[in-house]
Each structure stands twice: as C-alpha cells, then as structure tokens.
Image (cartoon, rainbow, N blue to C red; front, top):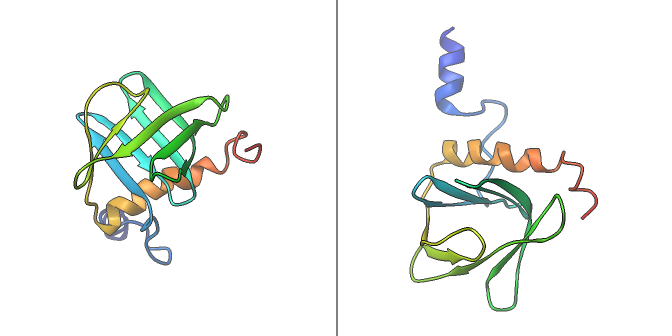
Length: 122
C-alpha cells in the first residue's frame, strides 16, 4: 500500500521521467499539449482534438487534425510565455511551467497518440 502511494505521488518509478520536451499551454479550463514527438492534444469546451504539429519558417505552430488531416489551429507566440491560436476560440494562452512529475503525466497522453490509427498514416 505504501509503495502504491509513493508511486502515485512521485510519478513513474519505472526508469526516469519523460516529457521534458513537451510544452503545455493553458487558457481558463482549456489546454494544449505540444508533444516532443510532434503530436498534440487540445482540450477545449468544444471537445478534444488530437493530431500533429510542425513549426513554420516564422516560428508559428501549424497543427493538423489526425482524424481528417484538416487544419486544427495555428499558434502564434506572443510576448513572454503567451500565445494566441486560430480555430480554438478567443483568448490568450499561457505556457505553464511544469515540474518533472507534471511533464511525465502529460507525456503519457503524448505517447498514447502513436497508437492512434491516424498516426502511422501521417
């Protein structure tokens, strides 16, 4: 029982933390995870969108839906740790400073993307 509690509070004890290259942005109760593996998960009041992203020559993040290859959003970095997006509603996103455990938990979602049927079709 004690070992289970320690594992839950410490993250994965299976060989180190992952997700150090992942970035998490928040806006009210919405979130975007930009995964180091070039996947993303955007969670808004409208639902969850998953897909892949790439950076263009101007530093903007261009995200494409995995399920139908349509545009998901364009993220433009602003001052400091802020960003705006198209197609995900109004408001400014803020990049969250996350500790290793939080990044490890976010990365679990990132790693699950590679099991989606659309991932290998990209």
